[in-house]
Image (cartoon, one colour):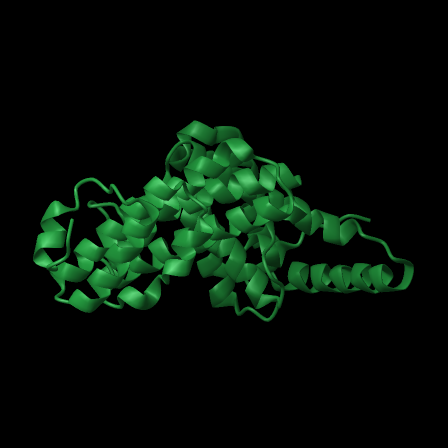
Length: 286
């Protein structure tokens, strides 16, 4: 026997009140209404239909009671004979949401994509489970998907038109950094997308320098230099990053730190270009 999980469809707990059921229905009906999703009508119609079916069952006391009994029976059967129909049905629902997430990201609807990603993670946390894209996609597809999500976080974090607070934008940049770092780590363990590695490193270079910038976080120690070394960039690029960091230190009057990092740059690239001005400021021989 197969049965949809109406509670999961409405993104509510099983002990949800009638008011919570109605509120969830209104929110999701608005989100998935075909008129609101002209670029993905077929998928929106499917989701809208499922939301309506869930609400029609759960808001009626008699139907809800019958549904709950059926659900409990199936779960008992699952425990006793190892049936996985119910679990697979729930998996299909999450996969459908993941499809919508990817569609949004591929069309550069970053806010929608990030919002759906965080909803999926939040729901998994509510049921005591860590969200894992690999449950729905192949290993290679999962890494590609993570790249798109990280890119969305980065775009929103650095967007001038984003109305989010400074703290919220910093959170998004931090999330992008963690996901890009995770991709590098995964690639070192199981190579699958070498053509992306250079792009990932370029994005991390930008984020790391942002953290050291006076326009970024005040705690410049947030990004240890070890992270830059871990990128394993060519010496010329690493030296350039050290020089930029030394310049940021000068801007906030941390001259000893600036000298230390600039010396590291010269150790890697003795003929470092563009360092004449900062050397003069720090009384160092160029």
